[in-house]
Amino acid sequence: MISPVMPTYARAPLIVDRGEGPWLFDTEGTRYLDFGAGVAVNALGHAHPDLVEALTEQARRIWHASNLYRIPGQEELASLLCAHSFADTVFFTNSGAEAMEGCIKTARKYFSHKGQPERHRIITFEGAFHGRTLGTISAAGSEKLVKGFGPLLPGFDHVRFGDHDGLKAAIGPQTAAILIEPIQGEGGIRVVPPQCLRGLRELCDEHGLLLIFDEIQCGMGRTGRLFAHEWAGITPDIMASAKGIGGGFPLGAFMATEEAASGMTAGTHGSTYGGNPLAMAVGLAMMKAVLAEGFMDHVPRIGGLMRQKLEGLVATHPTVLRAVRGEGLMLGLECVVPCADLVATARDHHLLVVPAADNVVRLIPPLNIASDHVETALSALDTACSVIEKKVQAA
Ligand SMILES: *Cc1c(COP(=O)(O)O)cnc(C)c1O
Image 1 (cartoon, rainbow, N blue to C red):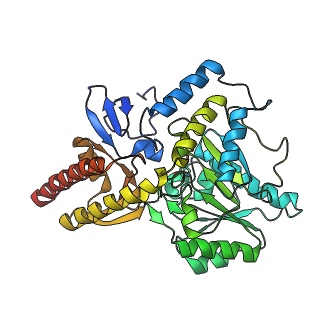
Image 2 (image 1 turned 90 degrees about the horizontal axis):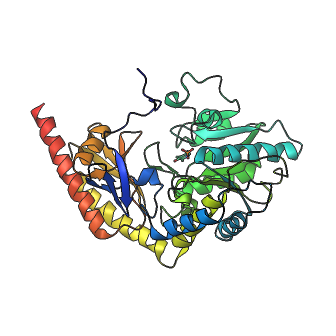
Image 3 (image 1 turned 45 degrees about the horizontal axis):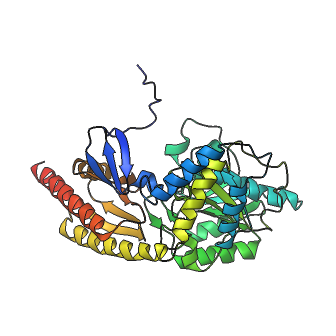
């Protein structure tokens, strides 16, 4: 018999009860160190006092009013995002996939508004993940995402990751944009090197294309800059943010330059809940925390420490682990054994980590972890690797 909760997830046998900072407690009171952070969402950990206060205070004031009226929180958060990014304008959504849909719509509308509606195709990359709506699975195009859900949304050209010639060949008279994650998350913490991001910007400028970044997972301070593309010294025309932007409250955003958003006039797009006062209160508290003096400097420092220790772990357990990938606090362990084994065994030792494609285990902890949390995580991983080694030897 089908379960009342539709069984689209193969869930781990952990029943979530409550959280506190980087710690998650199950209903039996067992404490886990949460280095998955709700898949890079809980950037300040669980139940951060600033976020709790912002949410509860707003809950007493007003929850929802619709976008028929001005929402001061939207104006304040959008201004902050624009002041600290390439963007001139922001649309708030409830999720990452909706933010990506907004990016796709903005790019298509830009060219139709300019009298070039035939330019609507978007180039995307193998291994990409942009969400689970029909538009975003069509954009990513992988078998795992699209199988059985056709017909898909037309207008996407898929290029192999790192295939420069294939990318150039894919550009045609109908191409509107190139869409990429500066660091693939679900795809296995695959980093696009800064020189490649710069190359993409040049290619877009040369062909009059829009450059769209999906920073839903790699943005909001995860690499030590507000957005990961900042390390490359270039900017996109359109970008999606979500996950960390709400710190656990459902919130996403798509942002654009004034030029790229020129088609997005009154009546062209909307959302009932997008930019709702509760989300804005939490988003503002989140943004203020991330922008606070020293907050983002901490990320490459603690990320560097963790990376160094993970390299040591790989050297100690070569039959389990192959390599370390990633930037800041978006790190991946390339496994020799099935990555699901490491995820499950780490959980047995009270460490939560997240699997990704390419047989990679993701370590995407809250951004405010301390070095003793890194020690605890590494010790759990070391134990888990030893357990797996023994099993491999016995087999
Ligand atoms: C999680 C994610 C999405 C989808 O976000 P949802 O909130 O699940 O819709 C899109 N792109 C990237 C890079 C993501 O990591």
